[in-house]
Image (cartoon, rainbow, N blue to C red; front, side, top):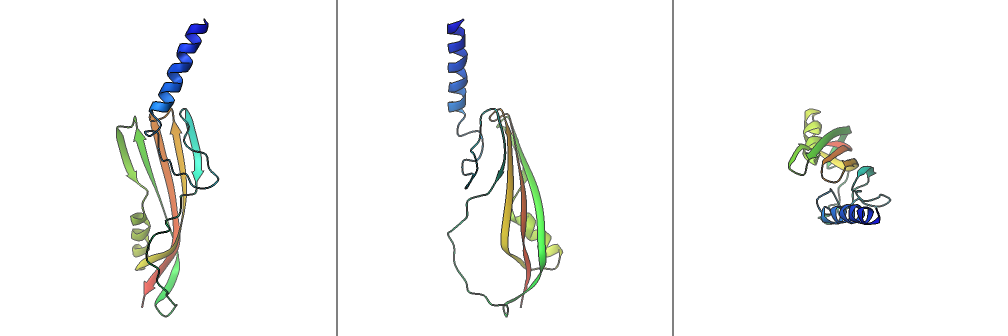
Length: 135
């Protein structure tokens, strides 16, 4: 009995370690847990992108048209089939549909759900920002 328990525990531990890189995003940002092997359902605050070029704009450069929101979802099945769209492009397309040229002050909420490691993963993203028209 003891040897069966040890064999099962060892197998589960090895499976958890082997799939470590295959079970989803590893950068969950502040105040969030990482992915679990059996089940994960986290609302995630993505790490900020601190690289880039800084511009000093004034309201003479653009007109704020209003708040723009978009959402997307992507799924991964068995670590083999992945599809969906959670990107900035979805937000930009929505802004352009509302007569805007661009989006500023983009904020993002991400929920990552994962069941039994790489068997099923789903990421839902909601993006919000200020739609602007350049002058």
